[in-house]
Image (cartoon, chains in turn green, brown):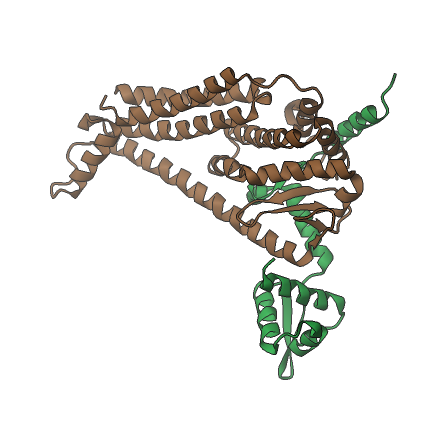
Length: 120
Length: 306
């Protein structure tokens, strides 16, 4: 993973870990062990805001940042991409097993139980 | 006129061949050769259909398609303008240009849509995916449903969900990884892309939809075959069954199994558990030869002044 991607991830972990919106300074402090320059943290938050992954609001002279969506909702979005594969996304990813109907899953369940507990 | 008739026959023949190929049994035994056959049929269809229209439109020049195009361009550049072709011929040339434009545009549009979807997907993965000590090179998503997939591209990535980790044993996980890595190595996404763009150009057209589905299934079998070289076919089959059986079943019952067709997973599992002999070398060469012959004939008809 590249450095910028790694930083974005670390910053989001900080934002997801707190309930209140944070300033650049707060985020820098939470990542004190990385010893990041103030401008670096600002650049990363700015990039995330442009991508719509964090929302920002004015608080006096500083900006405060908070996640636009929860971690879980992004995980759900990714899973949806992978399992549903509809429309434009159908050729974007390659799923091991494409989505199937309840009936089809039932056929597989029966096949599976026959293999695991063969009738003699 | 001869080349126009022959090109039109090839275009119609390709659609017939696509129907036959969709129903044939041999692709199960030689998915790689079948993928090549599908590509040849798709490409030959496009060139034959466009070529047939051009051959009709450029008939007055008597120099074939390529020679006719050059003559047409020369006439357009000359001060006298178009004198040789009439309105009927111009309509045929216009239709050819329209078809070419449509196919190219759809290819670009599909490519852009796929790139965008992957870019967004990768960015989110970077934020919420986590590494796993036992699965180097893969990312894990914390979600209880079972999913395993790859994001193809220059920076490719294999992803499995926590649900999959809980469901499969070590060997089955290795089988999934081997399957996904085969997709990435052989760039199966690029094989599927032209068929996805054809589907975009002609939505709801039976032969186009079924070609896409057939190629989609074949590349899965190609990846299955690659994985089978490294581990037991049964292990891979069990992984498929477990993930499939754990399926969310969100799609309304019957929506996917229209016309009583067997689901891809069932086809793949039976193929792994009861393998029939792989296609002989001779048969594979015959298929590759026929595909090359089809392409060569189409291109030759573009060039022959018939």
